[in-house]
Length: 216
Image 1 (tube, rainbow, N blue to C red):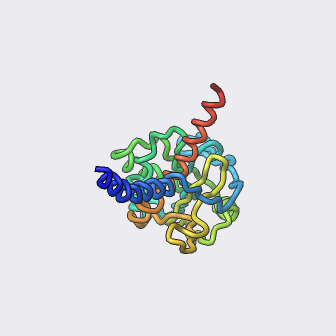
Image 2 (cartoon, rainbow, N blue to C red):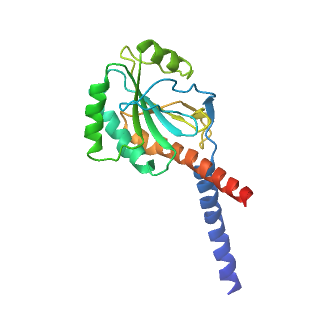
Image 3 (cartoon, helix red, strand yellow):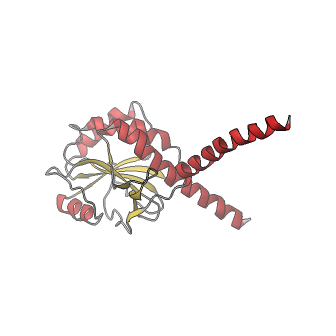
């Protein structure tokens, strides 16, 4: 009997250890800060004239530019793969920065998305082209906006207004750099971005638990 117990322990222990440590890496790995102190969205308002702020919010930041309707498939990918899965988290939001004058296109897109999603935490804000360029430059990204002030990539901004992404060696020991997530690719959003958003949300849930314990 003891022989079978020993064999069972020797067989099961490595599997349990693997599951424990692999899940720990997935759930609690620190997502590096790529750009600290991202500027606030000063004086930029939404379709209903309200201000939006990055501070104290976990933000998915995008730049659809003047191609809001042309590239609406990207918005649908983001909605289905990221937004809908996290919108119940009260401090989670999507913010799209578009050139002033694109309000009607934004309204049309929001109306289409609104048929399948609650867009309470999805915002468009509008600014002059030079303001968008200046703001984007302060993100210190490798990728650039195109001539329409657009990029298919979206970015994760944490509550402390830091741009987060991947920098350094991944779990395979390979050097990896990822500053944004391509909304053209549903697979990129579903696999890479979904994991990274989970890390950020887990980080803040852990911080909330710690703060509640201290209050008690």
